Length: 438
Image (cartoon, rainbow, N blue to C red; front, side, top):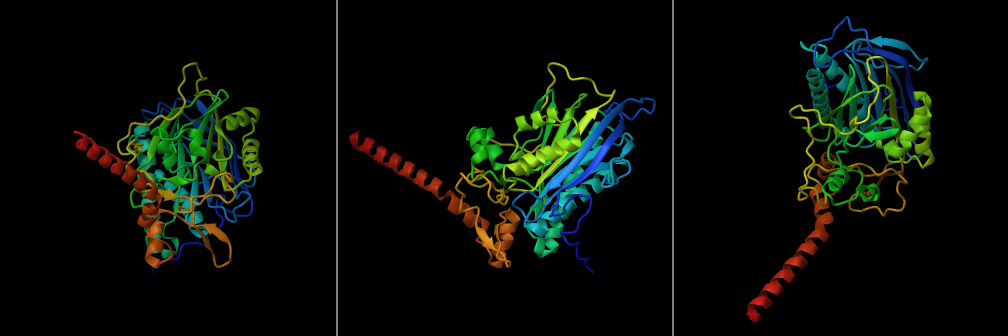
C-alpha cells in the first residue's frame, strides 16, 4: 500500500511555516578538531567554537514558504531546534551540518522538495559517514556527495510516483564542518559566502544560465543581475534522475563567518553589504534578523532564508596575508559541475535548463520574457508564475496544460535562426557576385 506523504504545509524543524519567520539558535558549539586527513586524536583537546543562528521568512510577496534550512550535529543525528532558548553543546569529531534548500514546483511541491532534501541529506550523510572505517577528509567529502546524489534520486522517484508533485525540485547548498575545514556541496543557485577580515567572498558557484554566460564572456555580472533569464538554473534536486554536484572546500580561520542563504537574500543584498553587516553585528541572531529585514525592506519578493555561522577557538589559526578565500573545487571524482564555454547547448535554453518562478514584483524595470514566464490562474483566482522545470514542462505537455518544452525552446530561438539565415543569404549573394565578377 502506498503511503500518502505528509501535507506540504506541515511544520517541522526546518522553518517551513508560511506565515512567520522561524529561527533556530545555537549559542555555543564546540567541536573537537583533528588533522582532517587522519583519524581523530582523542588527546588533542583543541576546539573549534561555533555560534550559529538560522532564520527563514516568507517575504513580502509570497503566500507560502518553500525554503528550508537545517543545522545538525552529526554525532547525534538530531537537527538542532532551539525554539525554547539557546543551548551549549559539545560535538565530537563527526562534525556539523548547515543546509539551505529553496524549493520549486508550486507551494505544495516546493515545500515538500526542500524538506525532503534536508531530511534525506542528513540521513544519507550520517549513514555513510558514521560507518566510515577511516574518517578522513576524503571520506567525509564522499559522504556529502553521495548523500546529495541519493537525495536527488529519492525526490525524483517520489515525483514520479505522485503526479501531483511531478516536476518538483529544490536547490541545495550544504556545508559540512570537519575539524578546521569546511566542505560545501552545491546544486542550484542558493549560495554560501565566507566573510573574512571584512570581505565577503562567494565560495559557491551558481549553477545557472547567467553564471555560464558570464564565464563565457557573453555577459557582464551587472548584465546578468538584471537579465529576464536570471531565474534559469541548470540543475536542481528532483527534476532529473541524475545530478552532478559541485564540491568545494575551505580552510577556516579564527573569526570567519559563514553565510548560507537562498536567493531571496542574495538577490536583494549584495556581497559587500553582507560583509559590512557581518562586521557591524557580532551577534549572529541579530545578524540574521538584520539581513532578512534588509531584503524585506527592498520588497522581499521571494522567501528569504539565512544561516549565519561564526568560527573561533584555539584550533583555528588567525588569518594571514595571502590567505585564499573563494571557490575552490575539492578533487574528488564525479563531483565537479562542468561550466563549459561551448554555447551551442545553452542558447537560448540549456538542455537541462530549469526556469524558477520569478518572484512577484522583482526587478520591475525588466520586461518579462513571455516565452518563459507565462501566467496561469489557479482555482482560487490567484496569478502564479508557471513552473518551467524540464520535467514539469513535459508533465504539463502530457496533460495538455502547457506547450511542450521543445516548442518553448524553438520559439525562443527564432530570432537567432533569423539572424543566421540573413547571414547565410548575404554570404551566398557575395559569393555569386564574386564569381560573376571573375
